[in-house]
Length: 269
Image 1 (cartoon, rainbow, N blue to C red):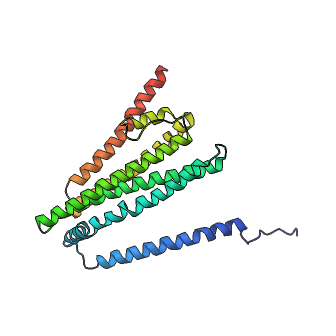
Image 2: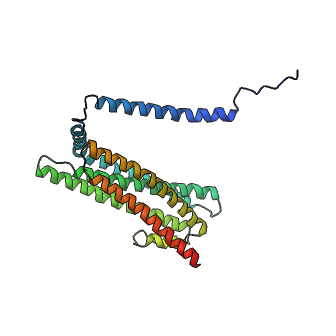
Image 3: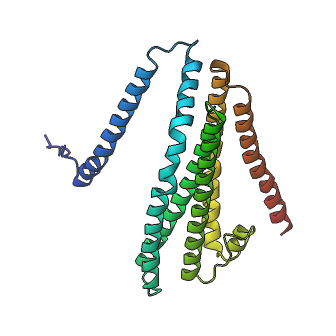
């Protein structure tokens, strides 16, 4: 008989390294999911279909009155501070960049991108917490006035910080790429910025826009289902369903409109 070579059951080193790299993340996700499920199950242990709406409403009221106003503090202090420190690192690296080191430029670009991401997260969090704080029914007019004044100050401060961070980051980008032009204070900033982009950058922006459209097209049906179930089971009303449907319609309508426009222009060209 001809001896057959059996495959070595030992996995290659690359596979072992990949498993070791993915294992901590797997255990973290498992632990967080278990903890979240346990806490949610404990909180809903005594809930019934009749008492669940009142229970959720009481939780929302506690969050709006006692958590949301003070949760705005780290979003207008710590988060902008982290973004500012990262911006200064990017600026220091940009000032000594020789214009040829591609790896150094990529590091600077990543830091500037993170600054813009932080500013976007900040403005989303601050606006949500502002609305949540105003939705709480305070026990007295004085308490409502104090809460409104405090969260309004935090909202204005957060929006100002976000705008200034974006303005400085965009100016740093223009320092690195002199062909770029436009100011974040200009209402037509996006159009002016696109004018300074070459074909490769415009194609990259288009790819990102397609990814955003795909994500929105996936999230909107899920939100529609959740808001419909909440309207039936929790008596949240028709307004959440209407808002999700309008956003879904705008997303699809704008996409289809510009598909027709670009198709017509391509035929004319």
